[in-house]
Length: 160
Image (cartoon, rainbow, N blue to C red; front, top):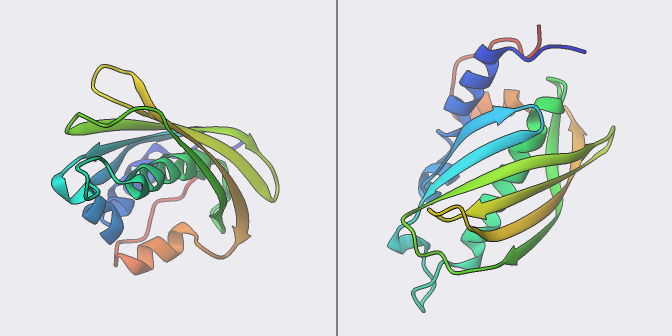
């Protein structure tokens, strides 16, 4: 089995956090490892629905992000992923200015991955849960595409 290059992971985190949607959402990936990810989200008034609660689209977006990136380390460099199914359960209101979302890869296969994510408030209470099915792509939605889109430098090799 190949070993992940920590410099690659560090560069990936830096590059993906430059994506316009991540910036717009106030979210950043802070950890990536084999089968796991961590996303931190700074909640602002821009995230609220007309009733003053966190919009369901924010829940979905950040759970999808953490679930997706939990699968990244299992991919070969010429592979990508596309979310094909996302299920989100909202369990409690968000009352904090910052939430933590962890992603976990449940199963990786040649063509499909199953992942999950949990959103936590400041006291560690689970306030949302989601599961995601991801389809593996060949030469589509790869890190090469991210590098080109955000005009970043070439990444270090992913595996030793």
